Length: 479
Image (cartoon, rainbow, N blue to C red):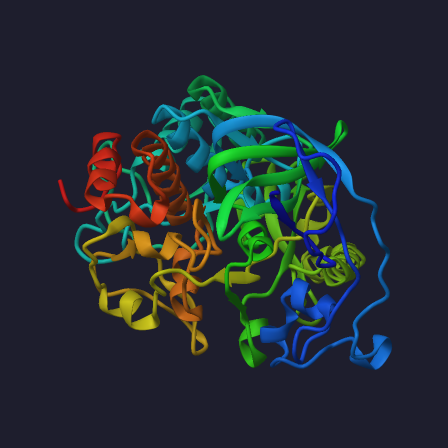
């Protein structure tokens, strides 16, 4: 019988017939997990609040009230090589790389388009193609991320980025550090690349559970308009941003503690339109007659991996959008004609879970520009909040080792994106969308090779992975 991990927890009991095309599941009542009730255990709040139960005063030691769901058979909708959960920058790059590597690849995305935070949260700036070192500011990310930008250029899908970047000359054919992206163009280009690569894209589909048997991940449970379904796979890539798959599968993780939480303020972006004249001095991703601006942040830190708190953050920021615009326009008559054209479907969440991998990136790794034998991506982005200031890195970039993508305890799983194994300071550098795409490409390439060689990600020959990445245009400083 295949175990499906989901809150509230369950045990394998008597279940319906377990034939090859269905999965039987049986839920049981809640039980306590040490100092945390099940609510906190599954929401990942233990590390966030120092191991004390946030709901005990309301629900008691045994946890929240539960409902017993009847056992049922779940149809297997796909049996494939690779399933990628999350179609954000990391996930779409992973899916493209996996499919181009010859693996049958299914990409699961909750919205009706790709891009994740870049589109669904209007985070319309992608940063990190070059380091910030004089005199050349070397380009450190190429591959699929570069391909996407060149495709965007070809359809006039780029704007002007407001992000600080040193004014180094850009050689012909090389990319700038940062670009503002037309989010509609980004949706189009990334979907086209996925379809051209042969990716099986499942839109409007939500990840629900992980299918685990004795520490081996065998696929995921999803739900969409067709109901609950199982997607079986040889390798699963968690590109959910929040590490949802890894956490549900039982991989260890940590979350922000104490005063670190407010450092990366979750923000609601919005799009504005100008009147007859285009005023200067508006901090925004600039597209001529329209722009995307940084709107209100949450009033207090939230746990973006928790449904209640995420809803609280959405309500908090959305009710302050027009107040935010009024403050921007105050005392500036030239801004009188600015109007809000669009708010995104989702609040921009900057960090939630970090999955514990075979290696954890540290502040020293980022600051000292450390290199690793198992490098699969390079990051040259500044540390956004390093003890109160933006710290630029005084080197050509540091390596992202493959081990950061391989979670402890669970096999047949890779993580990609902002939830890789990392400490806080290093994360505040490599969380930028360009290195995240490079990490996603590495995960997708690795997954395809695992399927070809019939090995787990933990046992993959990293040299073989590096050769494949370089052959497909990635920058690893190994050429």
